[in-house]
Image (cartoon, rainbow, N blue to C red; front, side, top):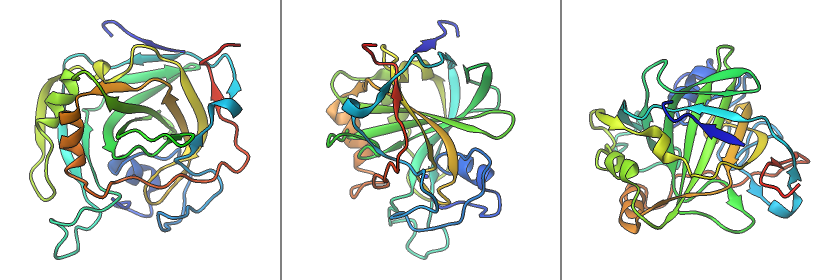
Length: 262
């Protein structure tokens, strides 16, 4: 289960520093190095994203996620590029590009099994990278965390059409285009970007962008949040051909869930 406190994937910028690069790009690594490769296939056998099959997941009493997300934060909206050296890069959308919201150090954290992970940034993919059997969602959010040893945990949240999400709408009012300046946005309730029910699917995986570093703990919340069709269309319009990685083979990995029944 996941408890929320009340008060409480651009190519790597530096191939030789996978952890730093991953955090600066879309996700982050758990400290292991990996070689760069194409988005069609990663360097190892524990790659992300995956296709989740609820009928074959392993029910388990998983460690509680204690989430301490800020309710009134200032984030910096920035565009993540993969083609900065290309002449037409400002007008071409790459499948590893996105818009992310960066948080100052020490603002937001998650603790699981006694280990605290700082929330570094969150970003979006369209359509969703993780699938539930054959179902895809229009958007998937990734909340990227890192502990003091450089290990990474990513919380994934699907977004589905429905009632307006005020926080998401505020952020999408400040979506920055490629080759434009970063945009600081205040009064963001990051906790409002999580669903009310907090069960999850968990597995060991990787970054979903180069260098596809493995050793990332993935927590995909089972319930999506909603956004209005207009809000969803605003983000999808930035990436008309999408900005996701294809699903990767599970290769014998076990996906655990606390969704129940047990």
